[in-house]
Image (cartoon, rainbow, N blue to C red):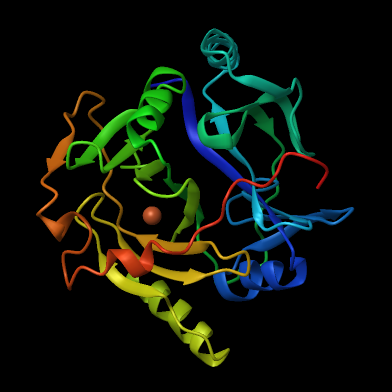
Length: 293
Ligand SMILES: [Fe+2]
């Protein structure tokens, strides 16, 4: 379901210095399936698509790009027009990786590369694993949150779901999911990418798998106020965070006004326990240098 130019969150592509460890976490801890592999690049998915997560072996740990699905051909053309008007640098006139028929890529604010595309090939999940249902959202920590919010609204046609303080954080949606991209003031990193499961039981099982490996969740299970999702988090080899969540608020009213939270009201962050945001937000992955991978 979509009301705007972007119909869904597509994928995240990450450069990693530890490809095997990253793929292990994605498959054996989170539960994604490997759909394809070529020249140091591994494609992974939970839903029935070619990829929702891509790891590429690199000298750097960093975000390669963020993939967003355009609603249709006209939406793709409109976004391209807006990107040109806004003066963003185009880095590719074609999709950046295999499995996608049409699209382009540009450098958005704070050096994050965005790929806007249509027509990803299907890959039907058939092995009945324990993984999540699909990719859900990303959480960025821009240095200039207000400007980043304006970019998402004015160029990519996102709607604002929740606001924390005057400009500390914004949660934005491109479809009924409460947020596809969340912005929290920070150091210019991607804090986490998030995957949707069906119940809190799956979050418990994630904690158990980590425990058996001698590792721990970094936070959760927790109930957020902004978005209402129950979430659990662990740190991946690149230094970023992976979230498994369930019960995210769905917003079917395109004109639903934003919920505004006072900076003093920590329930936006944690409805069940104490506030512990600083430690949690110290993790993250920065945009990879855009030289040769
Ligand atoms: Fe999240």
